[in-house]
Image (tube, rainbow, N blue to C red; front, side, top):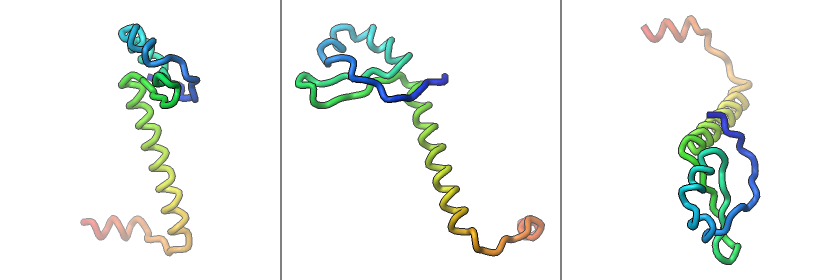
Length: 91
């Protein structure tokens, strides 16, 4: 699934969401829905499990990229160990 994650406007009040729960959950499989509480204060995002998993994978990839960039920066001036030496020490 290739979901496009962009900011979405507030779309439904909680009462409207509950009134058509099955239809709204079907919509959430295709695109995230933002619902607000009765007073319009708190907002909640409802999305399908596949979209959530994809979002988590994107987040994990971003975190891994940041970690890699940090490690490269930290080790920039350190002496490199030749692969042959590393491989020889494993045997």
